[in-house]
Amino acid sequence: MKKIIGFTRAHPAATLASIAMFVLYILIGRLSGLAPGDWGTWTGGIGTVGTLIGTIWLSTAQSRKESRAETTLARLHAVGLIVRLQVVAHTLDLACMELEFVSAENYNGNRLENAKAQIATIVVWSLEELIPLAPLPDFIAAKLASARARITSFPAFAESVMRMSGLQTPEQRFQYANELLKEIRITKTLVESAQSGCIDAARKFQIEP
Image 1 (cartoon, rainbow, N blue to C red):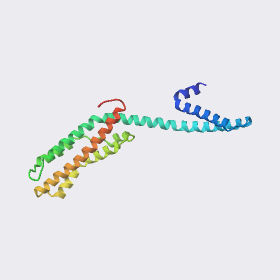
Image 2 (image 1 turned 90 degrees about the vertical axis):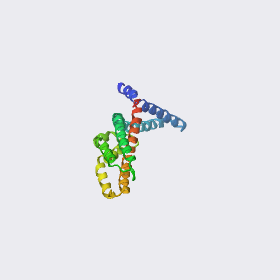
Image 3 (image 1 turned 180 degrees about the vertical axis):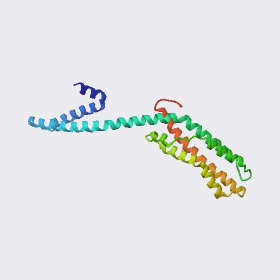
Image 4 (image 1 turned 135 degrees about the vertical axis):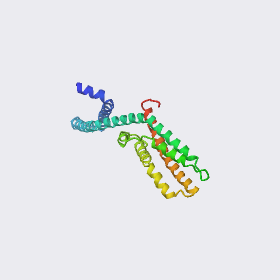
């Protein structure tokens, strides 16, 4: 009896659904005009179906519980990343500002070096830190993984673009700076989008960043 009461308290929705289904079967039996001798078979059928439903419910209960726990953990990790992502987005914005002043007529190598130096200060997150974020919507983990790859590979990217551009003419140097600016802007968009998703996760806890 105690087990039944405990189950009822722990799973009120399942209890109500079971009662409703039992009542429905009784009504169907009465409307079908079952003879007194048929009620035993009919009741046995109800018990079989109820047992099957209960088994399915219990077998999936643990899975649902684990899923809720994973989602809660993911939101906690997201909350912890909000300020960090804000700092990274600001750093990328500073790098963009350096390159936005570069033009074919006004090429300044110092601004390019300043932009590279800004990005070099970014401490990126590890892939292990992103794994708990996988249950969150909007592909937050994937966006941050892509942003991480772009930030860590930026020196190699800059070197590759420099070799292709040549840097012999003002136009080539401007093209070089413009390609770097495009890459930084893409990275910044990924970080800001992920940060927005983390803020949405924080609101689930009624936390304002």
